[in-house]
Length: 79
Image (cartoon, helix red, strand yellow):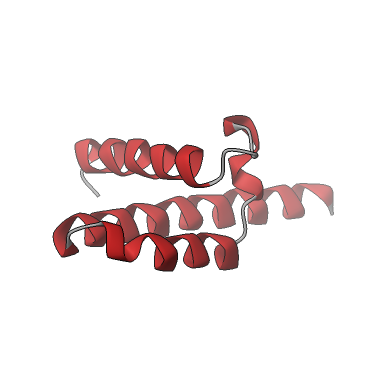
């Protein structure tokens, strides 16, 4: 993935999570599970135009992929 796109997705996802999950600090956003993110995306969908929602969905997907990789690395390190 292009680094500019990756950076834009990271920024977009971080902004979405800070506005939709204000009770979770930015440093703990990797603790969000996919079901809470999917639920927040579905609740937010009517508020966004389709093209922006598609970018937001892709950004969230990218964020979840990175979190799953980090979780996998952390569990391997604990073994």
